[in-house]
Length: 294
Image (cartoon, rainbow, N blue to C red; front, side, top):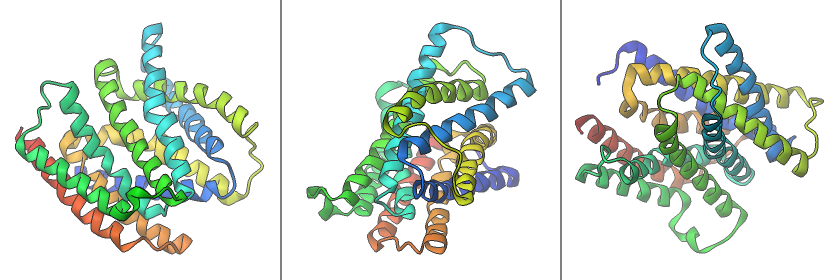
């Protein structure tokens, strides 16, 4: 599927929004704990999406089995990856976090091939996956696989989060594909907020809104703009560009995150991360081309 100028512009906007979210999350983590950060993210996004559903008069799901599927989806797509990646960001640069996040697409293609007969692994996809994983290993640092420093554990936590995202995409296709995507997103986020609230109380205590303005602005950005708003934009771009082309957003996010991290927090992304991202990008482009041919 070729991309129209409008599709390209909205794809770029989505990449910009998500790229800046890594910086916003890191700013918030200077003041609030990890679980509190995740709770804010899912709670405020839930309110925004339900307001959208009410405004659009979309049907509200009532089937208990469907709500069970929402809870699994919330765990896989929000609770686990948001928590793992936020904790990882305490020890990993913003830019490197965004690069490792791009592994979601690699895991997604691999798991889709395992679960769905129409997502077979062609020769070009195997090459793309292999190159992609090699790029990730370079970004992490091949010499670091045998050490357990906080930085390395943070990187592995981020990669575990990307695997959760890929598992969530499989679960969504198996159980939520018949729903309006905005309704599915609202149900998933509602379940995520219900899961995160008791966890946050137990680990961090009652969340407070008496926070520095920078923290409040960061929370507002990553919950309302980069979660609720990005979900709505994501489905618009998906309809215009197709799932294969949408994968290109993973190539837009890291440069944005790297630049913002350097400007705002004076971060220095390791050279190995740039090399790894370049290799990973080659793998993603091969997967994108193979997806359009298959």
